[in-house]
Length: 117
Picture (tube, rainbow, N blue to C red):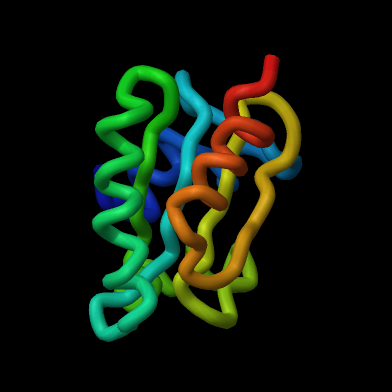
């Protein structure tokens, strides 16, 4: 799992300086975990996402964004509570889920949002 900065986000997900409308830059569908180190529920979700990143290696990418360090990105997505998890399909609009989702809910979202053709 890779931590994204503003620059790597623009390179791998969406270059908001270049495009006004959503244009996904990535090769694989992605999950982005908006988190903070002090957040208890975020610490619960982290190992689950780590497992999923291994389970779905080569099919999806899983990234993390520290909302304390990357406040501009958090503001851009209207993050008001964490964890917030953004599901980014290759085509179509990203979808946001709030809260510490259990593994089966994350897997359902991966299947229904990210891995549909």
